[in-house]
Length: 522
Ligand code: ADP
Image 1 (cartoon, rainbow, N blue to C red):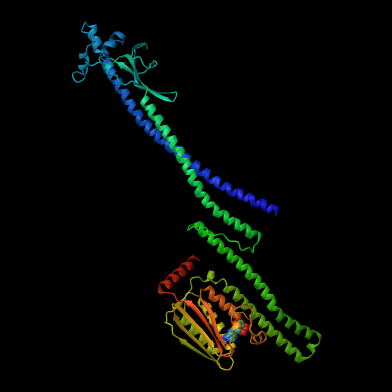
Image 2 (image 1 turned 180 degrees about the vertical axis):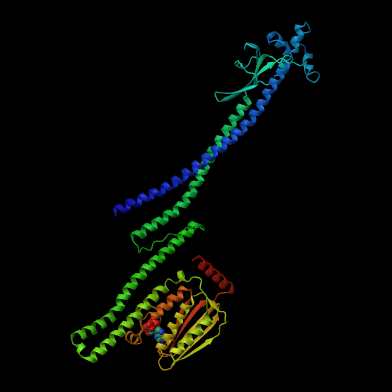
């Protein structure tokens, strides 16, 4: 017992870990997805802005190169500064000093006359010009780039320092006339707007990722918990049934219209069915041993009589053999009926899509039985349309009719007549089997459908009855969602009435289709 409880606890722990596992998996998937998504977006945005910054730096390089390539000699302070600043040149040449007019002689008048240094308004850009040997001949005094030797073409360096990026473009400056390298230029862009923008993008992405992950974890936790609790309820019921197979515990109504609700219902139905089978099995074994006891005892009695002295008396011998054979026959009949009863309880699984034409079967069964019971009048009053169909396997409908008509004949007294009528009432096919025999008292009426119930045991046994016919008839009727009832007056006769829902043409078609499909699937 203790071990069982331990196991139960272990199982519950497993279920909890299922929630944990699922939530962790969802969290991991979402985090990784957001991470990948963020990295992709971040690199696209950063590449876009970097290109813009690169263009700015390149324009500065081009402008400076344009100014400086007119110099034929190696770059020196003396030729670089005047080239970059025509105002300075003018002052060196003995012209007027800087005046307000200098600002007005803007690029609109003459692109060459403007002061390139004045135009260098971007605070992030710093320019360094080196001579051929790497000495600085000009710098706008901000971030000074290191000299890089042996460059023949434009080169780019991206540096990351304290989480901030900067871009430096190096380019040799060639004289426009000689095409020889006369110096080098290094333009550095500190990219402060880029860095602050990317910092914001990073912060937003991390923030959004964290919030989204938390939201998704919470949502998935509630969804998964919603999925797991019905499973827990099912496993609890399964454990209780495992402990006590006869327990009538069931999964409570989950009040959900989804697969889990469906599973819970099927689970309960399965339990009902399995427990029903177990019960049937038990009852079957009990009934068999009880009902077979009498014929076995009779046969045993005859055999011991023969063993003791009867075998020497030809008359006793004949009688005993006859009686034993009769009992054996009865046993055979009894076993067959008990098997029929057991099968009648499993019908909906075996024949779910069968349809039967009521009139056709009625006519056939009545004429067959009329042949066997020539001394009886079996009258058929059939008020049904030719195509009145019910959902039932035709052999079972035949079996039902045979049980009722056989009983009517068996329990008839003076009047050898049985009336079989059929009609449709309120969408139901109604079939009745009426006899004018011994009838059934009010108190017996409710009992005659019980297994092995016989009103008069000795007399019924005489007539070969086992008390199973009506049980089989009732099980068959119920299995096909029909009803069986009896009207009877003791001494005057009985009327057994069957009711089955009539199928519409559409339903018949659907059932036939289903049947074909099922057959093809086999
Ligand atoms: P059995 O094989 O003994 O006929 P049934 O289950 O068919 O078993 O019937 C149960 C009992 O109901 C019978 O033993 C009989 O007493 C009573 N019974 C059944 N049909 C009729 C009938 N048509 N008229 C009178 N009694 C009936």
